[in-house]
Image (cartoon, rainbow, N blue to C red; front, side, top):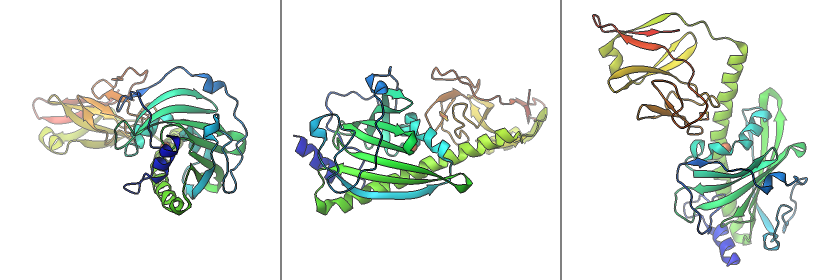
Length: 335
Ligand code: FES
Ligand SMILES: [Fe+2]
């Protein structure tokens, strides 16, 4: 049975998208599109062993806990890139399991945290395109001293697969990233093709992460520089009909951006920066009067700014929108 699982894992790439994992986990209920957290398990207490770079053919995992997990791994590819983000941002991103089904929505469709500590996390993930066979448990272990982390498939097809990532800070707030993909049970004539699938997948994931990290750094830098101008008391936007014709309308006042939308016939302005980790709300979908952040999926009521899913967060203040009953001029009022 295990041999069959490993063959499936190694060979699965109907569309050239060999995934992190393809699973045969049974009796697992993953709530699609939802994020759940659970109390940490024993995993969090396990000391992190020094993660030494795997070398040579037939490398055997140091992370494996069961004997059948200790089968030889084949390095099918190495992916190298430089990202436009400081290494501190990359570490923040590595610890951030919650963004998987949101920022990486084309790869993951759900995540369920099983355990978390400063040394890593363990989570059950469901992969696109869906179906009961697309679930797996991932252990991510961090070795900060070695500037390295390893994501290992603990359950599911592809069980035993290890993805080793080395980080190195570069000048100019950039980071060098080297990713090694180690897959169990790979026939030599399939390694290159599987490797290409991993590289394509990781190119996309790192593109998405880089965009998130770069935006976050930019906003954090602007906030630290205190370069926002004081907002005026009011801002005139013109006639209602003209404003409505341009909805959703982005306006920038005093260095801050707001989005004007119409909810139940009323014009509403909301902030475009998410209070969680500064995610972009300017183009976030509007559902039942709420905006949903594309980075972690948190929802906020656009009218009140309050959390719509029980978080202790609220949107930054936004101006009130008034329409003059005599002239139908639209005015933003601050403060
Ligand atoms: S940045 Fe995390 S939900 Fe918006
Ligand atoms: Fe990511």
